[in-house]
Amino acid sequence: MNNIENTYIRYDDLVSAVGQDVIESRIHQISQEMLDFLEINKLNQVAYIHQMALTHAIMDYFSDVQRLKDYQQIEHVNEIKIKAYETFWLLKRKPIQLKEQIEDDRLLYVNEKFLLTRLTSFMLDSEINMPIVGEKSTAFKNFLNTLYYYLKFRRCDAQSIELMLLAFKAGQLVHTQN
Image (tube, rainbow, N blue to C red; front, side, top):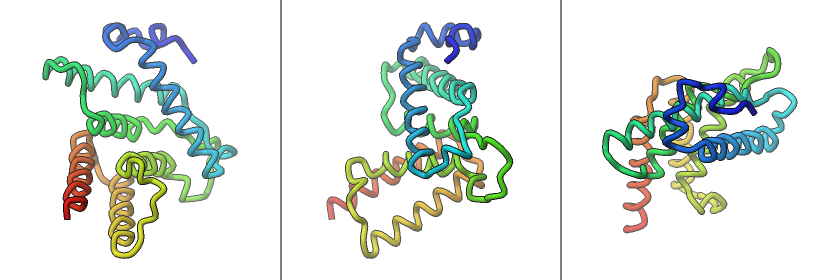
């Protein structure tokens, strides 16, 4: 991996504010998540992670979050905002690339599929292995299908992703109180 300071000179202030170790750790974490996704879905032979696109996505994410922190004069942002901004920049930069032109439409949206998997895991927290059955299963599958469609075809920004995650979490709270 290239040294962040050498590759992204315009990010010097950001690297100083956030810390090179924090940035490199996040790049490594998401890179590992992508590698796991590619392996689990048996896509290692047809797709790879474009490291520069991933690094730009993470730097843009940290840049947005740092602006938020500076503007709101806060030290930390909540996990929903983190996931929303990460998702937005990963969706915009599309770091998972195909190795060659492949005539399989399913691979066209590999980044969106990765992000859908990542968001689903986040939304379900530790309940990722709990079976969802009955009406809940159908409703959740419909929600995921709609979210996947949204990631593929709609113009989304970090704020709309944040609102969707907040609404989902609010729905979980209402459901557990009934």
